[in-house]
Image (tube, rainbow, N blue to C red; front, side, top):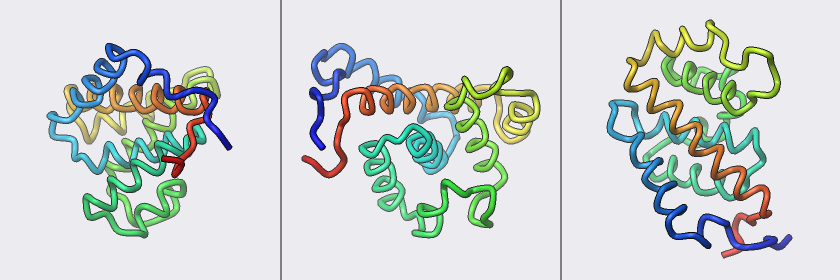
Length: 150
């Protein structure tokens, strides 16, 4: 497999700078970095973005995450490896990634569970983080970026 073109964000420095700034802006809210990594892995699994999966699973490992947690993100509902706040964040990530799958993609049950664990600033951070990873996923998938090619 070969990429169609380099990642479009790399072709326009202002876009790359903006996407990096968006990602960095979500980090100082009290939400653990590992929660963001979990959401990034889950969204990337759903979207089939191998490049983001490779990067974010490596981040998880570097952050000290266990293989069990890394390997079971896709089946987070069926494991004991994730905390209730992480489960709420993962459910929110799935809902926001699959917005076309339901008439009310982020229903009150999903939102209220996330709001039970996170304050308004943290919820904003989660939503922005999910939007950012979905942007990267779409750029990579559209242009067929290949994991492990560089």
